[in-house]
Length: 183
Image (cartoon, rainbow, N blue to C red):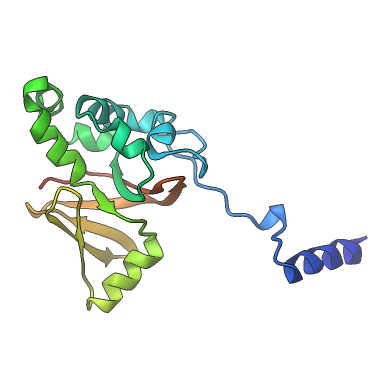
């Protein structure tokens, strides 16, 4: 029986069909399964760790954009990341009169195209230990490896660590980060 299963798996591999057992599923984020067939927004809505981000995306009017074809690489701050901001910052940013500032902060977390962690690591290696990523907002993020972890440094010198990498979406990829990045 074992030989029959091995033969079947080998035959599937020869014709380019990967057996279901070897498929690498997306990691769960915020306790929810993330589906590569859903958009960034559709998946983010399912994560209990990203309710603040979802509220901010809605307040900034970015739902349609981040639901579009992209592709986008999103560094998605968790609720805990937003909680690290000074008291009242999130409430202030969510006010309609601060929409432009909120949009600037959110689009600073987005890089055009799809950049997996391997692609970012390759850019870091090619850059001699650092890679500059140009955000949709227009200002750069600096990526580097620190202790085997992908770290980002924002325009103000703040750092954020990628805690969950390579969450595939139909319109890009999400990397969950532990700190809000500031332009």
